[in-house]
Amino acid sequence: MQQRNLGRQGLTVSELGYGAMGTAVGYGPSEDTGSIAAIRRAHELGVTHFDTAEMYGWGEGEKLLGNALAPIRDEVTIATKFGLTPTFARNSKPEHIREVVENSLRNLNVDVIDVLYQHGPDPSVPIEDVVGVMKEFVDAGKVKYLGLSNTDTDAIRRAHAVHPISVLQHEYSIFAHDSEQFFPVLEELGIGLVAYSPLARGFLSGAVKSREHYDASDFRQMIPWWAPENFDQNLSIVSELTKLAESKGVTLSQLALAWLLAKKDYIVPIPGSRNPERVAQNIAAADLELTADDLARIDEIAPDGGIGGRGM
Image 1 (cartoon, one colour):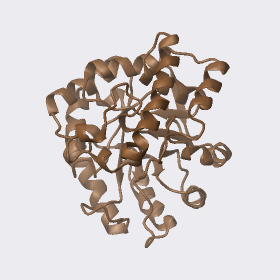
Image 2 (cartoon, rainbow, N blue to C red; image 1 turned 90 degrees about the horizontal axis):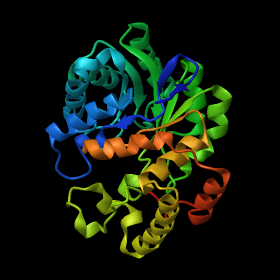
Image 3 (cartoon, rainbow, N blue to C red; image 1 turned 120 degrees about the horizontal axis):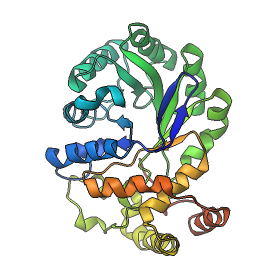
């Protein structure tokens, strides 16, 4: 597994990471034994960067990830996030940040969080104040690097002026191109991009089904890509992408991940899976090199991403 630099502060991680949201929330009932096996399989195959958040099970996801990585803690980087409440309101008040970060350290059972993100902007708290509190943890040796998630260009600049931001986390896939608007500022300031939902929340997994096949708690029920008026058109896009993947002897998910790796050398996708075999399949994408013709064909098939938008 090749390594990539995220930011200019020294954060170096595997070019493919692991996103742990699905181990605790979002994709129907979870199963801890399988999730732990999947996380450890990812590490065995070279993954060194693992991403979670307070919101993923309100501490349960952090505990699971911390348990899975405990034997290899010194060989990996762990990222987590703060800034939401159980009602999905935004809360980045200083006292709340301090409480959540201390809880995250306990949940993960670590002395240091490698990357700390604000999960999303809080309109009631200036970003300068938020990063000021995050910096307290860096100064105390409890956090190594800072990141922002789901934010805007102005906030990135203002945050970076208070303390260097090493990484932006944002959704990015063949189906979701929003992240491309950030490329100029990321390159100007030397900030890396961690791409979450790189398989479009499962639409690019090779096993997508219509929404009636998913549990009522599965958030794909609410995403426009799965809406009845959009689903068939998006399925047609998937069909054409699958043909291209098969012509290269790879899976659709491998094609989708290789596309991201080819976009910029500071992008690290973080696919997640609770299945060790699927984890291995995803990681094999690191060995796939797409040609200029391949990239042009993908852009031709999905010039504007998925139909209906990601909706979140």
